[in-house]
Image 1: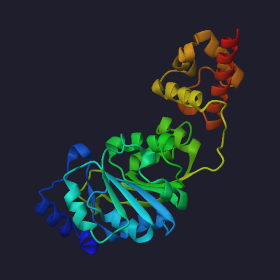
Image 2: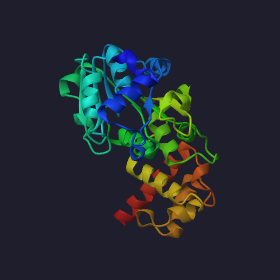
Image 3: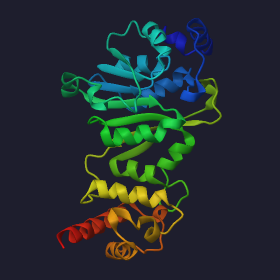
Image 4: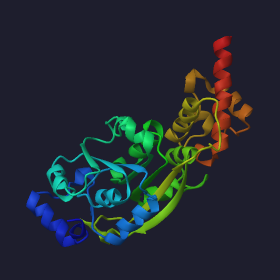
Length: 294
């Protein structure tokens, strides 16, 4: 069954047999190209000691390919229509567990059993729909299990955002959050022609390796990300205006915070490097602490 899934005719046949058409509301596009699957699995570096959490099993192409290499694969699929189909396509793989659920709602740390996490390296894998790409990445960054890496297929536009530099239009909160926790590299580019149905954009596969040592170490991660969210939430405004009100600080106090951090108040969030966000959050932390002790 696995080899047949690489053929567009097999995808069409399975869809017809189970009465399944790709759901636009779920951003479904089924991958049907063996070379691309092989490049993704190789790029993810999946090995015999790995436990893989897959976001969206689809028709099981990546799931089965990962299971050939990994100790265990847990695939989370939102579309209940696909569960009987997956039971067929993955029937010959005993190291796969299917979970019918929403990756944005399930407890990510409960997907693997303690005995599995104790004995294996955790890797995340998936072909992410555009509508949930940022929320999924951010959720794994903030709430996920102690994974070694994530390998995701994304719309090329999102991959460019993640790789953007300070001062570029694509640079944003997602860029900062990813860079804070991960090193990223391009695994491969993917043409829209290898999907059924064909999407309107091309894709990129990125690998996110979690940093063992962070580039910056803010005093408070919560305040660090509060500054990032506030800055980019009003990205057309100067930092002075965008951060006013944060932690109850008025305009004058935010001005003093920015001065203490060595950041010009008229700059915008999209111009700040990671260490500058950290400096602002540390200065804000000091200000809040001083007000609390006053």
